[in-house]
Structures are given as C-alpha cells and as structure tokens.
Image 1: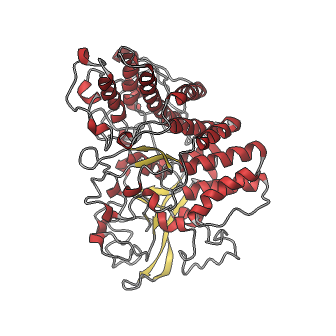
Image 2: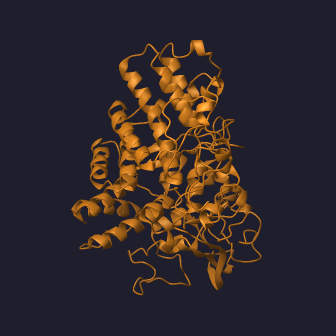
Image 3: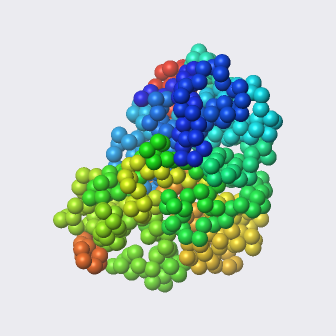
Length: 540
C-alpha cells in the first residue's frame, strides 16, 4: 500500500473509530458529521480517540501505523540483536545494509497520517465549549502523539517535513524537508509546554492516555539522543519526583498481560482482544508452536549476556562453559530468548524442550517458519497460555518504561560529571531487579560508559531501542557489518532437554554497513515521485 503525506481528513468515520481496551472502546463507533463535532466534551474525547486510533492499527485503511507492536518487535532486526528472515516483511534489508528507495513500502515509517489527524484535531478543538483544563489536556495528548511520530521519523530519516497545520493535497505534495535540528528543537519545545497540562495519573478506565510522565520521559530520551546531558538529567529527575513509577519486581513477568499498566510502565500501546487486537505475537514462535519465526535473535545478542557473577563470558575467570553455554547466565537471557534445550511450554500448555539444532526436529533451524539462528524471542511470549489465540491478544506493547529513565539518567549524568554515586544507584536498581550483582565500584568514566551501554542492550533487548543506540553512539562499523551467526548445531535430549553441541555456529547472512549511508533509511521513492521537492538521503 502506498503511503502518502496527506490523509483525507473528511474520513471522519475512521477518525472517530474506537480502538483500545479501556477508554477507546467506550466511545461511539458511528460516523459524525462535521457540523456535530466539537459541541461538547464527549465529542472532543471521541475526536481525540481518533488520533489515538492511528497509533496501534497497522492494518487500517489509512496505512500502517507508526507505533504498533510489530514496529517495536521488528526494529531489533535492524540492529545486531536480531535477524528478519522474510524480505517481504521489510526489515531484513535495513539490517543487512542493502535497503533501497525502491524496496516495498511495508517497512516504511515515513507516515504523516497520524500527524495530519492530530493537526486536524488541534485546529478544530478550539471551537469546543469545554473548560480550559480539558482543553489543555486534550491538546497536550494530541501534541504528544504528533511529537512521537516526528521523533521516530527524524531518527530514521533525518530531515523530515515539519507540518503543524492540516494540509491540503496540493500543499502536502509541495512540502520540503526540515533540518533535523529544527525538528528536534520543536519537539522539545512542544513537550516542555504540554507536560504541565497533562495528568500525572488517570483512573483505570483511562489507562493508556498520555501522562505528564510520558511527556517528560520522551523529552529526556530526545535530549539523551542529542547529547543534551544536563536537561536529560533534569527531566529524568522530574519523572522520578512524580512519585508514581518504580521497577516492577519481576523482569520476566513485566511483559505478561496480567501485569500490564503496572508502575514500571510510563507509555504503552493499548490493545484489546477481538476489537483492536495485538496480532504480532505469532510472528515470534517457531512452526511447531504455530508461529513464523520472523524475528530471530542473533548469537551476538546471546553472547552479550554476562554470567550470573557479573563477568562477561569472554573473561576466562567467569566460569563460562561452552558445552553448557546457557547455565549461570544473566537471568534476562532466559527471560528474553528461547535457546536450544529450554523447557518451553507452548503447545496446548504442554512442556516441550525446544530443539532447533537436530535435523530430525520439527523446529530444525533450516525448516519453513523456523528460526534461522536457532533462537526465538521469549519476551512477550513466555506464557502463551495467557492467550486463547496468539494472533488475537490484548497484550499491550510498552514504549517507555521506568528502567529506561533510570539508565537514561545514568548515561547522561556519567557524561556530565562522571560515575558519581547517583549513577551507580540508578544502574544498580536495574541490575538488582534483574538478579545481577551491583556494578563494580571505582570505574572510570569510560568504563562506566561501556557498562551503561552493555546494560541498555540486555535490559531492552527486543524492545525496539537497540538501533537508536547504535545510531547515536556511532558504533555501526563495529557491530553491524560481517557475518551474522546463530546457535551451534548438535542434539537435544527430548526427555531431559540436555543440549549437546557438536557442530559449528549457523551462518545466517553477511551484512555490510556504510556509515555515510546506513545510519539513515531511504525515503520511499514513491514519496519522491509524488513530491519532487523531497530530496533523497545520501547514498540511496
């Protein structure tokens, strides 16, 4: 489906459609006439819900969404964390360095649909006879959604057209790209203005709406990504001072449906089974579990998890045993990845030792819809018995959580003043929750920098953040090119799960990376064909 800059904003039926498990599904689903819109507070909320609708519906008539579960999951395939085995799903070429402007657009996040819906809402809500607090709050929600869309696009494409009014088709087809620095300045200004007008919390019936914490946390993320250390520290502290967020006690259970909307979640995408389902879980399991194995964790990611004693596996004193490579590792490895021999209760709630390394196994790595690395994503799918149908679930997808705020603070504060006690405290909160030892005391600033970078990778694996870290740290040439490997081959005892590795690591693909090109995605050629004022990114 082609993605155009403009959306016909007279599609009011779509704009006002319901879409989520809490507040969104309580609004009317019938179309409104323009003359009846914005006559009271209920109309305003219904119209605002249309802006939220664009968030989590990648299969709508207006084109794929920009903040849906699939985009979060697949984004790790653009990094060294995972491999996407099906080219038609659109992310493989971004990961291996061979993407072009003429690729299919299914992976394109160059999407102005939601931006134009928010612009339309903001231009019309001022007509509504509602009290000032509700006006400021609803404007703040729409402005946040618009900023988040611009954040994603500016990270992936660099310069993007900055449009804050509802455009006509002619105007949309004549826009030019705005420098990223200018877009960033605008985003930070928007978030600073709206944060005080947003509630700190909502009642349960309105979970999923934008909060003050979400605005401050996104602002801190943008500041971190742009090296604005002092303001990032300030905004992370502001999130903490709200007094409503804390780490959820269990790392693995954090991602289960019965624990969603917990105190560790700052921003998520709300889904509702049947009405507006999260249909993305099925892309992760292997064929014998009814899945596609579309997102395959790499050996590089597996190797990045330290031993339980805090030492990396390359350290000869760590106790790492290559014949039993998954023993005594950081608990986040088992919470995030299904590895050979792991007891994995998928099919009909029955225990099953996962075996991708034995040619006789139905999940053998080379089979159809089986993981080409031999590893599966476990995060989000650790208990599929939570769902009647893994293709139709109500599992929310987390976009920002409190652990990120802690690690954002640690990184910014370390860059600002070095590894002071507050940096250690933030890091150790995250590590202790995971079951790992505290950071070694007395680290230099650079050693702490490397520790923070490692912590971010293992804490947020498969949550769509790794590529942005590679991009901003400019480590692409070190981590992206070259061979991508999966597990070693061998056998798995079907009765005990004992894995015996006798072969070499599977070679999945060989990647290239050009730092003058691959830190940005190409603008889809279809967009440039429509609007000749758009200029392509270098190298494409």
